[in-house]
Image 1 (spheres, rainbow, N blue to C red):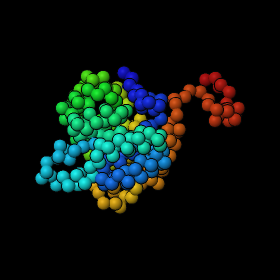
Image 2 (cartoon, rainbow, N blue to C red; image 1 turned 45 degrees about the vertical axis):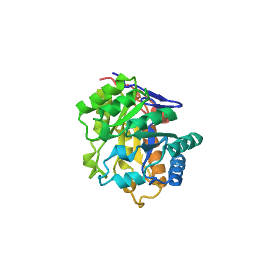
Image 3 (cartoon, rainbow, N blue to C red; image 1 turned 90 degrees about the horizontal axis):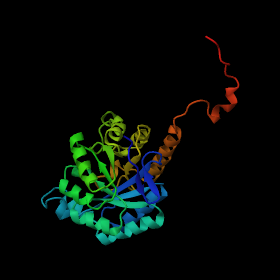
Image 4 (tube, rainbow, N blue to C red; image 1 turned 180 degrees about the horizontal axis):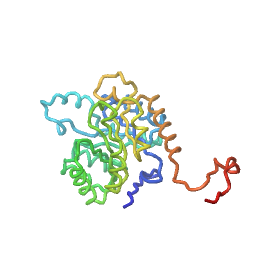
Length: 284
């Protein structure tokens, strides 16, 4: 069964389309709107196709006695601020979308005109949230970290019930991933074949080797954490790409795409000058 293709305005995700590169800002803006705007501008300049945020109300996401409550509260952007970032993305030609963590956040993204919604690995088993997302009819990208194939298939069934086209990202929910041996990038092509939808890779390694290899392994989407400075305070900055590194990753992804090309049979243009030196057909 052929994997479905997702149309996102002028962009397409899936077979025959360029790899869709997402700069995952997440909460790397540290709750600072000015920094968030700088991140969107820097991601666009570095060649990303999209910037991903997180949309949540801290009190609905974690308990008040959670050790990360304060961190999340400090990094919370208002809906109005996020609307401004969506608008800025439109001006710069980079798509801004988000991961909602509660039902109110889903409503906000739908009303704001988001073209895409992301489901975090932690919510693959959150059927209430999945049903709410399915009801929007918007395309969805799902990260599969920690999920069994049965859990993932169940989540996709819910999304399919709302006629929402979806893609799946292989990822390892470790920050950072301990070693390349833990990546199992062959999972990418396996997901596409078994689930008949575009598959990609959400990277939690340091550096750009893994996401570039992932393209060679069949990824149609690459998601990489993004920051202005990897030494900034916060949980994700250290595993993120800075603007220079993101530009290097995008360029490398495009080089791998070009090298993969299309299946060929017979001589190609690059062999034209050498073809005359090949042996003529030799009888057995």
